[in-house]
Image (cartoon, rainbow, N blue to C red):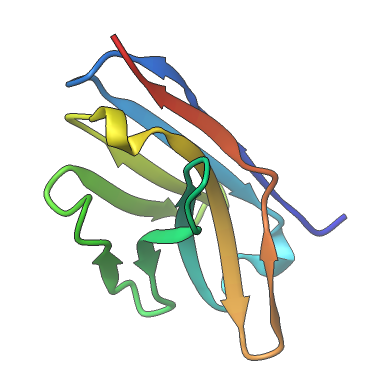
Length: 115
């Protein structure tokens, strides 16, 4: 079954850290750019980080300097290290792979930043 499975979300206090993981089916891992998106209640889904096939990483302005995206090719896993979390980072975080023929999304993992 071809899929993406996110994990690592949870409840954290402001200033805390979380690491999200996205395990990718082997057949999907190197077919296109791999992204992290998030969607907060009542807001549009926004791109958090993107890693291209060539390894170039881009971040959304709101997370630059706090979040780090990486991948482990041996484990077919995409990561998002999130530091200095803020209440406005609260959202469902999704993993996405996009290629010329389409895209696929994971089911999402909830991140809640609250004291």
